[in-house]
Length: 169
Image 1 (cartoon, rainbow, N blue to C red):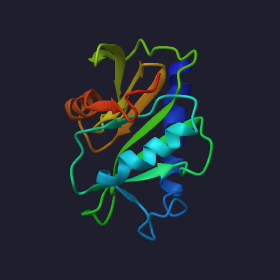
Image 2 (tube, rainbow, N blue to C red):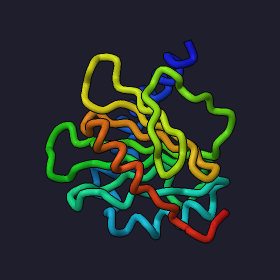
Image 3 (cartoon, rainbow, N blue to C red):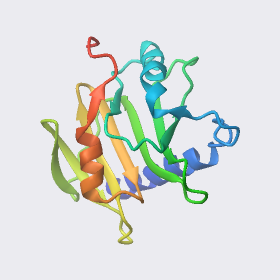
Image 4 (cartoon, helix red, strand yellow):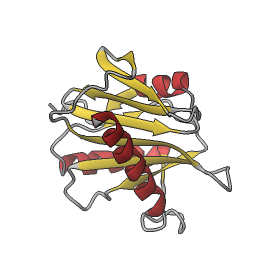
């Protein structure tokens, strides 16, 4: 039952991200380019209680919507990567990060190694492309979900994740 609750939470967060794209400024062109992401995330990390990670291997045609914006204290960070070259169905991947707590590992998923950390990949139940990949890295719970990337692509993206501020603890 806990597994289904996690999937429901994942779908809910993805839905909220899609609904809030206009509020986040996507419609008015206020996405952050992948090249400018480092500075924005460094500002957010100063106001958070966890280390923030960002993927290093992201296509140039992608940009990112950041929730929350850097002005707010945050206990949850949502990065939504969108493909600027697509007119419809442009959300490529969502990455959720927060301070790790008592998360339970999903035993029904496939075990994967992400940078020396135990991760779990769970494909979507309706056999769609992608799924949910989650792990804890240096005290940060990270969850990646996508319906556009396959399992291998999601794992490559996850393995490219590096701390924004490499000096933080």
